[in-house]
Image (cartoon, rainbow, N blue to C red; front, side, top):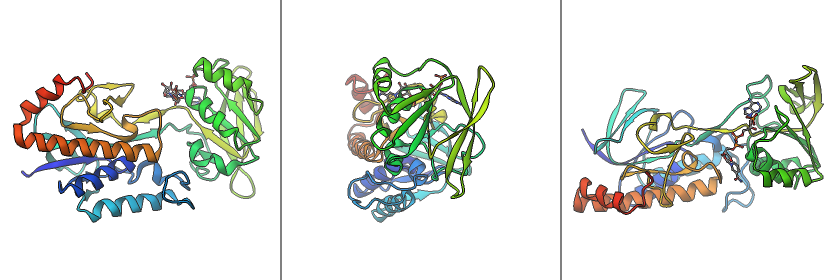
Amino acid sequence: MTVENVIIIGSGPAGFTAGLYTSRAQLKPLLITGNEIGGQVALTYEIENYPGFPEGLPGPELVEKFQAQAERFGTRIEYDYVTEVDFQQHPFVVRTQSGQEYQAKSVIVSTGATPRKLQVPGEAELTGRGVSYCATCDGFFFRDKNVVVIGGGDSALEEGLFLTRFASKVTVIHRRDELRASKILQKRAFANEKMQFIWDSVVTGINAGDNDAVASVTLKNVKTEEEYEFPTEGVFIFIGHKPNGEIFEGQLAMKYGYVLTDRNMHTSVPGVFAAGEIQDNHFRQVATSVGQGTQAAMEAERFLAELEDKGYEKVKAELLDSEAVPA
Ligand code: NAP
């Protein structure tokens, strides 16, 4: 069996960037896409905050450009889904849904995260037409409009505060009467005149108006059971993210489902790197994922050069000794 130099798992901005860099380094990387090519970017209507595109561009178009650039230098793309990895042995083993088994000297994990869905009627149909999971991406389109934010954590308040720059009113809808978010964000949110709160309430439906865009949400007070319609043009859902990391449990050091890395994108296993939202629940931007993909690729390149010189056991011991690697 051929032993690959680098296998990249995932096809979001971090993965394609890692492909671009490792292919330009002549490492002939193999990128296994996963089920959603482009990840969250592919689901984003318009991206206006990725540098180099002053007019903005649709998310799927940016994904096509990322892929074309990675392929131009020799990244090989497999449209498959990784179901199992074994990082306890070297070369590492990667198995896929289609029954393929690969061996690799290094692996870059970039499987991303998926925003949690409310799973109420109207949510899927109106995504991109008033329903959003990213204020930084879509807030600009809601200038002088009334929007609602669902959730009571840090993301809900932080993104809600961001939305007050554009929207005329931001109403946070929370299922309890107490926020989970940090006190400092709560203080800022309560002090902001554009923010208001509806407590003890859940969204049971998202409703379209005449123009097939969001016109209201149906709310239910969980204490009184009262149900009513609340008019709004935007529904921003921040009820947590689910990192796509199940297959790495027991293989890599993880916390709350995220893969732990040091600042150079090393995981707890020397030779395995992680980049993008699978290891970053804080910034979650295309630009930061691209940066992390670059870092992971450059470190993989360095690792492979050392591997050639010294062999795995020596490089592994040196890396573990350096304390660079999270436990
Ligand atoms: P989170 O802390 O898990 O909060 C999710 C919120 O959504 C909770 O208030 C939860 O309600 C609510 N929720 C969950 N499922 C729901 C449902 N089906 N219907 C209605 N509401 C639902 O998620 P997050 O805010 O995305 O934060 C994730 C992590 O990133 C946290 O550790 C957070 O501290 C961190 N973070 C930090 C910053 C920062 O420091 N600036 C910014 C963003 C995120 P309950 O409270 O009732 O459970």
